[in-house]
Amino acid sequence: MTITPEELWKDARRGDQSAWQQLYGLFGGPVYQFFLRNTRNVEMAADKTQEVFLRIFKSREAFSGGSLKSWIFRIARNLLIDEWRKSGHREVLSENLPEVADQSMPVEEEVINAIEHAQMKAMIDECLELLDEDSRMTVCLVYLAGLSIPELAEVMEMPLGTAKTRVRQARLKLDAMLCEKMQIKRVEQGL
Amino acid sequence: MNCNEFKNLIGEAENLAVFSQTPEAAAHLKSCSDCRAKLAFEEKLRQGFAGIASEAAPPDLAAKIMAIQAEQMSRTNMHNEPSQADGWFDRLLLSLQGFPFKVAFAAGFTGFLAAVLILRQPQTAPVSQPATIASGQRQEVPAPASDEKLLLAKSENKSLQTLEEESTEPATMQMAMAPKERRQVLPDGLKKSAPVLEQIDTRAERADNEERIPGAITFTLDSSDDAFMADKDAGAATLADQPAASEADMQLALAPERERAAVKAVSPAATSRFAPPPAATPPRLAASKKAESAAADPAGEELRELLESSGLELAEGFIDIDDLAMRGYLPSAKLRRLRPPSGSGWYLQKTGDRLRVFLKKR
Image (cartoon, rainbow over all chains, first blue to last red):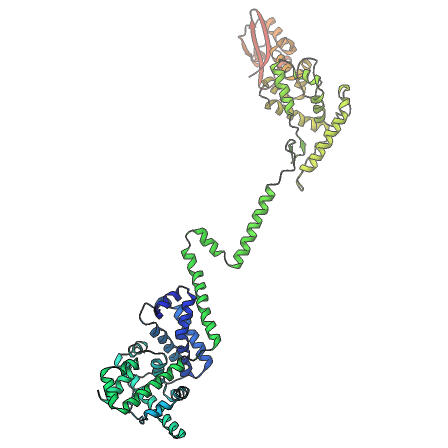
């Protein structure tokens, strides 16, 4: 029988160290990678990850139910936006995003299958760095953190349709970058 | 399902394996190589993100985050425990958990224990020898044996002096209370008690030295006159303390020296505790007998003769000698001589034809 994160949280907030450790095992890595991919700063990513867990335990009475994952990544997202604002970042997450055209080049199935897992991770990492902050954060929340579209809408405090649009636009940008890289890789490897 | 619908659905699908096995998706995938490539790309992308997400965080981060829970729980307990404490004593103990409070509490408790231990020490001063510390005047507590002897003498109708003659100890005690100047010449019967008197002096001086409070003003009565006056007061107090003391005894003890000398002529034993006692009559009993036998009083006898010679008929009771003097029965010279001490008066008692005049307290 699988224990849900919410059940682990009930035990952890009462002082169960084992439950707290399992929660860190579930969300510690994704939260850290979320900050690391969005800030490109290892120390800051660690500090922000620690702060997320500190905040969730301090405000443990505030969690009244719902998805624990959404609650944790909402805190992480708010911390990231605060950090962006402190560093003079441009205004993020504007409501009216420009329409994004599908510019991805078609990639053959055998080319995709030939790409190794490590190569794929490296290409994703490179493409994420090239993405704009809004798209990168959205992609990270969905594909790194594993949030569903409804959970993303909850975390980003926006309607479900808007969340779908954001994910789709972010994926078009990312896919275009990845396909471009794959084509380059195909040429390099002579496939 | 066309390619656009497939692309939109595959991007929103949470589980690609489940999505690809749906009938519409499976039918489209069989006939569309681009969508198969798209599915393969999506699987590679998600595997890549999953690989990134599973990358380990720094090792020290895990320790820091694990410590968050313990630290927050301890802080929460410290904040919540006082409100959860049932009684005031629990809250007091919780408030004393801080280090300075612990030190203060330990110091106070140690002081309390020390005070209790000091107060529980036995008193070094002898209880059986009380003394007037401020004046340095010795006050000997009568030995219980003497009280027993007094009671025994009363019950057996035997004088205390007789008992004192049987044992020289009370006489020795009396001499010990007398001034040293008077003790220079001891009676023959008490010479054998000289070492005892010296021991009593030594103990009394030691007790004086022990019982004097450092810095307190003390008075030592060395002159024989002062000692006598103090002794006279002490004698009156001693009589007053005795329930069997008669009014005549009290009157005699408080009387001036001249009157006491006059009474001494009648009954020398009644004047002072230090006067040589008569052979068989104790002082207090002698004073009572003197008051009751007016025939032994020359002043009373003179007054009786004066009344009988004048033929004056007086009623039984107190005699107002001032009234007699105003009426010419009593010359002024005799009035001064026959005036009774204050508080007392001459009392006339008639037994048949015989008159009896004696002093009686009003």
